[in-house]
Length: 133
Image (cartoon, rainbow, N blue to C red; front, side, top):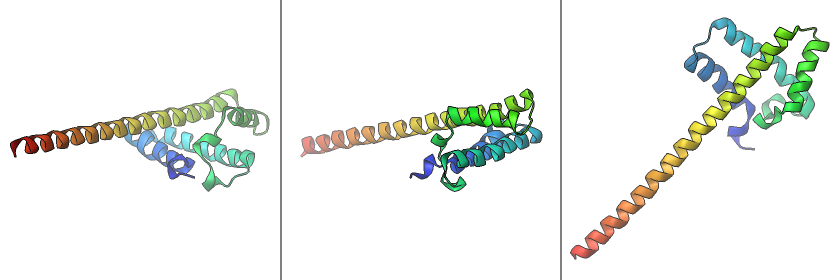
């Protein structure tokens, strides 16, 4: 399993980089989003029969999220607004993951473009040196 697909990596980036660094959300919002994940993660681990440290971002599927939201309402007695707040936290995590993946892909494409440019420049310099001899 690749480290970048582990859920813990994405949650750390979400809580520390995005909520605090990028968005500068209030402390109460940060705590609320954290609490939503504290409830979600054991639920997902139970449904997927995995330990928390082996969960991947792909384990948070729509069907599991729907079951989680139903459990919040039915077993925990949460109100609709509380359920929707938990869903907002899950949506935010998903959006941040997509954003960070796009940034990473752009950086990789930029690195490939640089490598191609360097290769072309080396080739041109070799031709130039050969022509001068």
